[in-house]
Image (cartoon, rainbow, N blue to C red; front, side, top):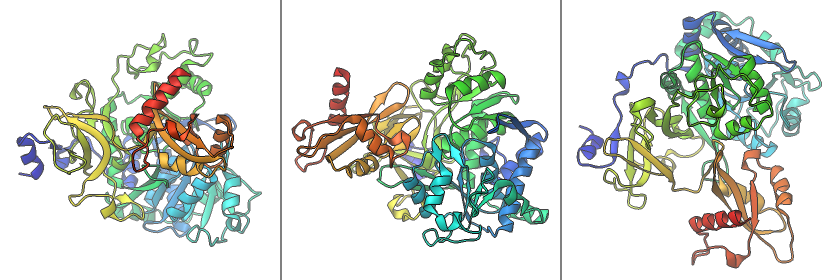
Length: 562
């Protein structure tokens, strides 16, 4: 009997999920094996479709999708990629992201999922911190000009021969762009790069696929976490593929589902939800490079989308479109009645969306399920292989069932660790990660998430570090100090609000500071509101630390009055 089982019998909040070995419905747990298995299962069924930059509809069957992944693998092998090579992917929601990520795995490499919201400073940090060797990139994404950013960051490579090196990025060997950019001699066009792998024997690719292991590192995601610099979260292939197979079961959609996604796959939730809910059951992914509500509605109607993978704030923007009421959304059958989309007259909203608790560090859900297995007001049972405990955050003692405390977790989808951070600084002596979240267990063993003990802000599905924002804002010459908090919001979950104290005789407007922040911070990190205070107005402790709960209350009151 395990310690956790003894604790549960004693009425303590330590619950172990059922045996992972007994879990049904799973396929290959390596990324290369996963995508290969899908190709074998579903062959000529439609897998992907999107409109290219010229507006032409492009489609791939499952077999063609796998072939494209193999072409990427061959090209990487020809270019010298080996076991564990880091391959950065700076691409929006388009098929090349999938080809690059799973093709990298076929070559034995690790996919570094780069955030397309990144500013040049953030991109520089990600490339250096992850020691990226090969970079797949898109020329431009919305207002982002990544060609210009990369040229400024890596001039020796971009302006060189394609074999040039840059001392600032000692491991970066090649940059490949989805578009043909002949004006930049050091950047290789996508097709040209793939053509260079034509002579790699197929048995070499097959051998690398066979040699991959579920515990091999598969992906690196960046998350703000609770520190000023983003954390690089290392995930095994098993973690990613387990969650994909699970989401395929949780969503319970028909194999003919046509799922729409415009959210970046550089976030683990979108990775698992899109690939799991759709590809594991033979459906088709309708891709949109980035969210544009008017374009999204047109795609829904044209492509007869039946499942929309969207965040609440995106759904709200869809309802604000002039074409909302007149768009034929009768194909959208997988819509939860509690979602904003269900307000459309064509939608019945009988389907129920899966519910659960998790984070990037656990590759989404560590507790959760679908339908009746999730009790009302809870986030479901602990998933197979996982152990979840509720502890007193001060003493570390396991609390009784029903009592609130900090959620700590371990299991097969828990990250391998933060890149370049000692494991002893991440996990406790029993291998648990302390989430910084508050919660409790019901008598039947269902987990209830209550909120965050930490200060991390969750806005629009993304984690934002207040200290990161404060570090940037504090560099403004007019600012004496700044304290950033998350304030509840109907559709975004929380919005970022910065409370600022100005230096004597200095003036600054809200919009001026937002413009300043946009120069360094990704768009979702830029404060939605900036409030100005005097030192005397802010609630401080005797040791001159901000009382954040009181500050949040003060901010809400100030915003309500306004």
